[in-house]
Image 1 (cartoon, rainbow, N blue to C red):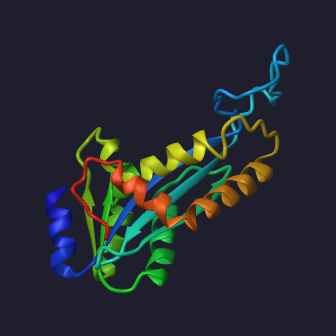
Image 2: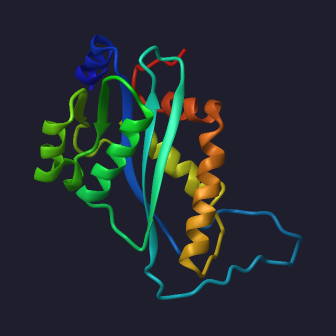
Length: 194
């Protein structure tokens, strides 16, 4: 991990943390308040294995001043190397200059297609996190917050409604830079954002 941070400083590059996740139709249950003897009931559609796959990037600018969140949703799909490459192309349009990508060892990140993409594109340096170390990736904190706060206790029976709710909740988080900074602060990384 230290090599990625040093490279980002040396190259005057943005540090980009990337991760994928899935938002399921079944709600994540969280404690809630209700009047005494009125137990809240969540009705959900059973046997629904549909999900909204998502990919997100938490980006720290080269001067370590600003933090941005970019995300993309893929209803009824799994994230493959094609979706990862398309996300990186979109991200490249938003972020100028060199990028140091920090991500896990997902097969889509290590595929031949993804490696070929990096060979064609300049100024992108991928850095793999150690195996079984999700606590080092601040995007994991974003997924936890998204699922356990705005999306908790939502029993939705339509995949398009789930995608809309996920998009709206993610956009709210995207606009809260203090919250985005907290995702980085709650990792054991020695990364400081001014």
